[in-house]
Image (cartoon, rainbow, N blue to C red; front, top):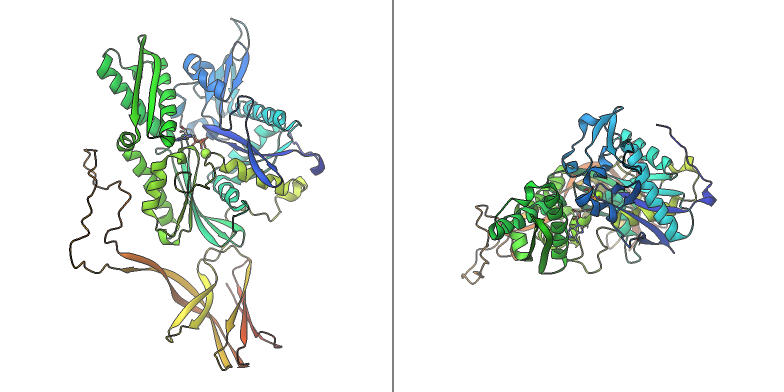
Length: 573
Ligand code: ATP
Ligand code: MG
């Protein structure tokens, strides 16, 4: 592939943030430091990642998606993940109802009739070319909207994108005349979008980002420490995602149709199935907003129209196994990060499927009340989950747009992926009022290094000598069993589950009865340093500064506030 290097001078750039998903893409820009998602000429902010060719004319986005019914062979969909991959390693499951991927020149290609005329030869387009054409359309829409040519973008990518995939994406963007300022990981973009809000506080926190898309779900644990983001663990799943929910509704309505009208199964006919799929997706989206949704397809099968309705409770019952799959993904990533639900400060629900109220409600049952669930149905101020990544990318783009292309890699902006970090907390031992030794964290676990934090430790009431003990700290979960109830007044009526499946976990939100109490407590670990400060004034304070270097060695400095001198010690990694 010819690799074009696009590098406008920093002052000549017009920048956007882009997410380029298998199902949808979106574009954002910033106005006065606030991110906004741009609608394309069809008015769409979530633009289907699809190209379709009809009589030599190229359609993209929602218009191309509509052609999946009438022109599937010349419609290319679900191709983003194929960029930079060998044919042997791709999963073509989602391409059965559109142009099929095939092997050509060590890469994945699609053959479509993209030229006008009855006898025009079809073209075989490598996925890099399909991506370049699609990105060109996005850039054109953005340029139209902004009234000037977009030159550069920050693009979000999954955390498991390989170097080859990244290079292929940058090359495809180059073909589309778009400079890639930086690729940032999707979960970090989502965190950035939240942290950049005026009311957002950049505090030290552990965030779970559940990015639930159309063909894949990616869940990550991100540690935010002093404005630096570290990805602690990720899980990727290709079974539990939006399409699985569509499938539940497709089967539901197909069965209902068969019961009512008999005849051929609409799922066996490609065009009927395409119609079922599109209408099921619309019905699914409507169920995220209302308690009832209609389903209606003209000429679904053998000329017979079909209309029906479904309510949310019924939907949640038939889709329960998929919802439970999402729960397991979230639970497994926390386990993978060696954390507990109590360690998690925020859960960001990102991606189109995260609009689903049941998913947010389930997160509310998995996590303690102290964890904020950021989703439209649980937090009114939540950002639209479909817009998070593009917004985060746009914010990052506006931050780095003034850098020379060569300097961006070295820039120390927030969107770092995996960086070295300390595993345990580092802090000091202090005496509680009851005389017990307690751990006071200074550097939180998972803090990216190098890091430096300072605290002031008060001297005993009457002053005197202070021994400062710097130690590592670990948390563990303290479980307190509930007191046995004296009388049986807790027998609140439990809603019977309408589902007759034999799994017994239940969906009710109110599971508070007699739960054991679980809390996070600090445990004092290895002593790193001890420093004695003599003769501290009455009411005085001792300042403790901890520096963790990039090689994880620790330097501790202690001194009396306002006094000269001090004690300094280095502990090697
Ligand atoms: P992927 O790469 O996983 O295929 P993506 O990141 O390109 O997906 P998203 O836009 O995040 O795509 O997610 C698309 C999925 O979200 C689709 O399955 C779509 O039906 C679903 N979706 C979009 N809006 C809603 C909604 N309001 N309620 C429920 N599901 C929705
Ligand atoms: Mg996505």
